[in-house]
Image (cartoon, rainbow, N blue to C red; front, side):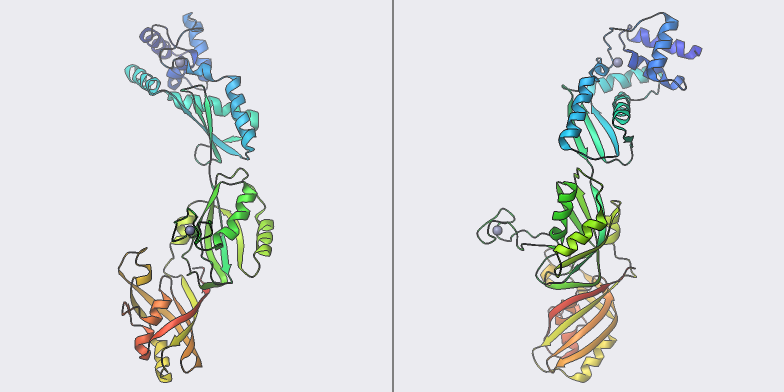
Length: 406
Ligand SMILES: [Zn+2]
Ligand SMILES: [Zn+2]
C-alpha cells in the first residue's frame, strides 16, 4: 500500500476519532488507490494499521450503509412485482439527510481528498445488486426507470417510469374530429349538461383513437400528442399523412409489437382515421417534427364559394399568386401572437364548378392559412382571393391533400 494512503488514512482516523465506517473510510481513500473496491481498501488499510472499525458509529454517514439490507431489496422487488413493470435499463437515486452530505463534503475538503460522493456510492451499491439479481443494465444517461430509495426514513421506494415515444403519420378521412382532445368550452373539462358529463367538446380525436390502444397495450398512465402542425376540425388529412410523435407516460410495458397493433388500430378506425409507419423514436423527435423546414410544403384542395358571379378571366390571375403577407387570422388570435407572416404560394390551379363556385388546388409553404387567403380576413391577408376576384369568397370545404417529407 502506498505511503500516501497510509498517511491520509491516519489523518482521517484522527479527524473522526476513529468514528467512521468501513464504507466511508474506503471511499475517502479511493482516489489514491487503483483497482480496489472501497471496502477492499478499507479492510487492507485497517489490517496494516491494526485498527478495527466494526461496530463504530460513523460520524460522517450516521451508518446509513447499514440501511442497505435484504429487507430493503425485498421492498424494491415487491414494488417491481406489484407494478408488474417491464424494463431493461435503470438507475438508482437515493435520498439522504442534507447534514450527511455536508459532513462528507467538509471532510473531503479538509483533507484535500476528491472522493466519490456519498450518494453516488449508495446508488452504486444498490444498483449493482439489483442489476445482478434481476439481470438488468445500469444506465446513468438514459434509462427505462429510476428506483428512488428514501434512506431518510424507513426506506420508502418510489419508481419513476420514464416515457416512451412513438412516431408515425396519420390520416383523417372524416370531418368533425379534432387532432387532440378538446375540453368542453362550457365546463373546461369538468363535465356538464352541455357535454353530457364527458368534459369534452368532441367525443373523439385523432389522438384518442390511437392513444387508447397504445395505453392499453403499454398499461401507460396517459399520453401526449405532438403533431407536425394541425388541420382544423372540419378539414380532412389525406395523402401520405401528417407526421406526429405520441408520448406514452409511465408505460409498465415498453416493448409492444407496433406492426401488429397498427394493423389492429387501423381496422377498428377504418374510414375515420389511419396511422402508418408507427415506430419507436427518441424524445427529440417531438421538437424536430414541429419545426417545419423551409423546404416542406403542403397541398390543399378547397371548395370556394362566392356571394356573386365571378369573372372567369380573373380566375386565371390567381395562378400568379406568390408572396402572401398574412396577419394572424382573427379566429386564432387567442392562441397565436398577432404579427404578419410572409409565406409563398408555389403552385395554384382552379377548376370551375359553376358561376359562383370553383375548386382550388394550392401548394404552399407550411403555415399559410388557406381559409383566410380565400376570404381576405377583413384585409389582414394581402393579397387575397376575394379581392382579386372582386367578390366575397369563402372556403366551404378544405382538405390537406399532401404534406411533403422535406
Ligand atoms: Zn460511514
Ligand atoms: Zn361540459
